[in-house]
Image (cartoon, rainbow, N blue to C red; front, side):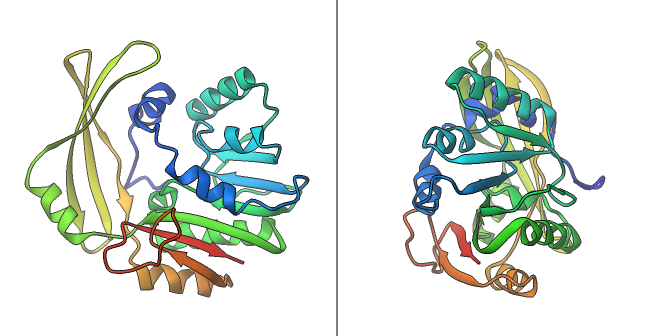
Length: 250
């Protein structure tokens, strides 16, 4: 979303993405906060390949998914069609999204706000949420709680983080190296891809880190009220050792 920082093309390959991201620990959390009324309108921002969108649609909700990556949306549409789900998938930038309707619940899952690299990017996205959220509607999001020790360890050596086979038969091995920029709060992550036993490329997964008090303040400055802040998807209290920041806002 900024020319200085980027996410590599292979990371946005739908089949490679789906092969790595099979965990649905967050799905039950988002399901718990869905409105009781199945006629409610739901909007997922940064929906990717529909990992959460499709199960929520199958629960009977009217949900739309927004993503700015055509390859991810193509995979989402194919999966939704296979499951018999009629979902409106929209290719758009969440900083400039302008839809004619408002929604009862909007969520940004799966650490996606880490790809909003500057404060102005984040604030634009928050304004889009405000514009599209009905009065009294809920806004949910999750992201990492920065772990300085984890970052420091990641700078020391390359680590293997994933090995799996995609649905089209590619054997994937990913090794990670990271470098943190104090000035920008960007964690410069490199994923080294090996496909079918051979080195393929180095792909960037740069992520802006948001520290807890900082993100709390940003939400409040953008007229959100934090009604819950959890340290994980089991809704445990946020504390020093929490890996996640999980918000429920109005």
